[in-house]
Image (tube, rainbow over all chains, first blue to last red; front, side, top):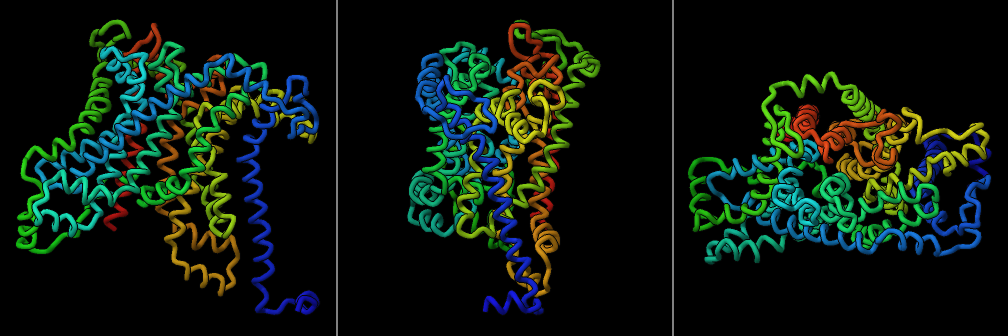
Length: 291
Length: 317
C-alpha cells in the first residue's frame, strides 16, 4: 500500500489527499503557534515570579526555567501590598453584583417574558435604551450621584452602577419568553398564583441562563477597573484591580515582583474558570450572539 | 450584548378569537404584580443609567465643576472641546485604535475558529487556551505586557537574541509604538472571545456544503472563502460593530501600559481616558467632561444603533 502510493504518479482519486495532509500540518502549526502566543506570556510571568534576585533576567537566549526557584517574590509582594484585603474587597463587590443581577434580572425578566400587562412594551424599551448607553458616557454623572448619596469611597458605591445590568434583564426575558406556555397554562388552571408559578414552574427551567448571568456578573465586577478607580480614594478600600495597578508604580524596577503580583491575581480567576468552564462556553454560545 | 429586543416570543395565532382565548387566561390577578417584579431592575437602570444620562446632557451645557453647580453656558464647552488639543489627540487615538483593531478582530478569530473546529480532540484545549486572556482583568493583562514589552523585557531580549534589532525597541515610550503595542494587547485579549462567537456560528453552516466542496476538489482557502465566510457573514457584521464599540472605548490597556500618564506629553490619551482625567479629581471640570461624554455617546450610541437595526433586519428577513 505505502510503496504503491509513494512510487506511483498521483492518481486522480488521490489528488485531494496530499494537500489535505499538508493542510492538517499547517493547521496544527498555526494553532500551536497561537497557543504559544497566548499561554507563553503567562508562563513567562510564572517563570519570572519564581526567579531569585540573584538570577539574571537578561540572559541571551532567555531562560524559561528558574535556576533556583523561590517563593521570595510572592512574600515580598504580600508584604508590601495588602493583597488578601483587596481580594476580600473585590469578593464583596462581586458577591453583591452577582446577587443583585441574579435576583433583579430574573424577576424583571420573568415579568417581561411571561406576564401580560399594560406598559410591558415601555418597560422593555427602558432596558433596551439603557443598553445603548455605554458606561463611560455616564461616568461623571454616576460619580456625582454616588458622591451626593454619601457613597463615594465605599464598596456599595463601587457596585451600584452594575447592580442590575440591562443586558442581563433582556437575557432573562428571552429565556423566560422561549419557555413553552403549556406548563404555565396548566398551573394557572390549577389555581397557582404568579409567585408560585415563578418559583416552581418557570425558574427551574431557566437555571442554565441564571448561571450564565451569575458568572458573567462575577467576572465583569471582578475585572472592572475604571469605575472603582474613580470611586475609591482610600487605599484601604481598593479592590484588587485598583490595588494591583500600584504594582506598575511601586515595583517597576523589579519585573519579578510585578510578575508575582500578576500570578497572585490570576490564580483565583483561572481556578474559577477551570471549575465553571462549561458554563462559560455554553453561556457564550447560548446567550451568545445567536443574533 | 446582542440579545436585546427579540420581538416575537410567541408564535402569533391567527384570528381574533384565538387571541381572545389567550387573553382570557390572565397571568396574574393583582394589576401591580408585574411592576413589583420589575421594581428592583427598573429602579437600578433608571437611577443608575438613564437619570445620569439625562444629567450628563444637562450639565454639558454648564460650567459646573466637582465642587459647584455651574451656570448655563450654551455651546461653550463644545466650542472649547473642538479647540482643545488633547481632545483632538484623544479622538485621533481612539479612531486609529478602532480602525486598526477591528479588521484583526473580524478576520483572525474566524480563521482560528475554523482551524479549532477541525482540530477534533484537541479543540477543547485550544479553545480554553485562547479564551484564557478574555477572563483576565485589563490591569493584569496590562502588567503582563508591561513586563514583556519593557526595554529589557522578553520581547526585546528575544529580538536581541535573534539579532533582529541592534538596540531595544522602545515599545512603551515611543508615542506610536506604545499605541500599536496597546492595540496588540487588545487584540491578544479579544481573540478568544470572538473566536467562541464564531465557533457558535460555524456550527450552523450546512455540513453538506463542505462535502460538496470536497467532492469538487476545492482547496482549503477556496472552501474558506466561498463557504465559511458567506456562512458567517451576519456574525462578521455583528463582530465588526461590537469590536468597534469596544475599541473606541479602550481604557485599561492604555492606562496600565502608560502607567496612568497617557504617554509622554499625553500623546497616547484616549477618549475614555480624557473623560476620566477631566471629570475626576479636585480640579474636575464636570461640565466640560460631560460635553466630551456627549460627543462620545453620539459616536458609540450610533454604532450600537446600527447593530440593533442590523439585528432587526436579520430577524425579519
